[in-house]
Length: 259
Ligand SMILES: Nc1ncnc2c1ncn2[C@@H]1O[C@H](COP(=O)(O)OP(=O)(O)OP(=O)(O)O)[C@@H](O)[C@H]1O
View (cartoon, rainbow, N blue to C red):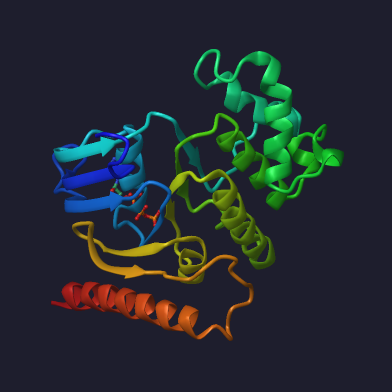
């Protein structure tokens, strides 16, 4: 794909494990450069699998996977920090594992400091080890580690699901700011519809058995996005539309199960 192409394009994707029936069937997904797309859907519909296919960790049975850039970051629900390393040294790991010579070593300290500041972690925390940080702070370190090599594409697998509601909302807000500042493309898996609407430009609703996209809802809300947004009519309309699509998916499953 050339530079003007979408950042990610999945075409007629079918994925299965072993001899089992496919878990994803005929899925298509196009993510424009700079766009954030959220994936929601019932447990087991294949959201994480889609991320792993995009990352090249799983080969599909059939279909095409196209990605403009190899510069990819992955953020998981667990921060997965090295317990013996400080916050700063954990972010350094992102550079150690990145492309050799990029950025040059003399720029590492500045890059690490910039990313820790971008994710809202002050210098007073940089020398702390993970057990001295809160869950929200650990996630911020994890985010900084993924951002440090300056990826073009970030894949988020329920990154804030284990956090309390306030921390999650704060991180949603900060993520929007960081994306605006840094301009990467993202695919964000979540079970939380409000979060999906808050952090994305478009929400795709997936159904299970087999996993596929059944609805697509645009989120034409301008930055900055406010919390709480209960008074924001557009936000509620969009959230309700996604909720209705999800209810449809779950009811279909229930009817299928009783048939
Ligand atoms: N490595 C694997 N081997 C066999 N089956 C797998 C493997 N990975 C995923 N699956 C199956 O593929 C289906 C989709 O799993 P996936 O984790 O992508 O769903 P999900 O939508 O992310 O679920 P959740 O919301 O619960 O995290 C599930 O039925 C799961 O059991």
